[in-house]
Image (cartoon, rainbow, N blue to C red; front, side, top):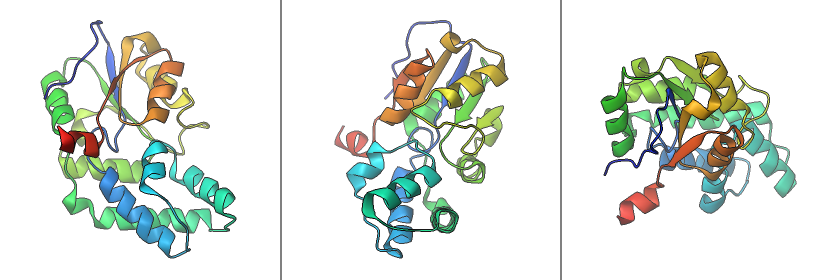
Length: 199
């Protein structure tokens, strides 16, 4: 299935990573579940997908507040990321996105704009063999306000020296789409694994 691209002479493509390029959300959910179980913290799958695109540390703080817990943010974050990295050999890409990347590569610049830490994003891209396709990564810890705030996408546009309205965003999660809209960018919604499986 090909992606439906809006009709506009875009000058850059900005991709989310997890759930957009990499079909990694099921693996991330397993990693979250294992890490949080060690602290008796509940994290429903529906909530996990609804919070897609939020930085890992922000999710842990929100879970602490919601459940009256005191999980050490850095420790849980490192544990969750380590569990995800262990599962990377299972990682696959989202087929229609990979197809579009290969078709469009070299025509306009690509960037990844992610709520994940840089080492995790680079590990996913390297596993898929496409790290060299992206001239810019903007990852968690490299901006003050994460999605749904527009800052991550606006930072990528600024670093590429391209006007926001000339950037097209590829996103799977509602916070990322809200961030794209707030940045004045058009977007393409990538279906979740459940939707793709039902097609």
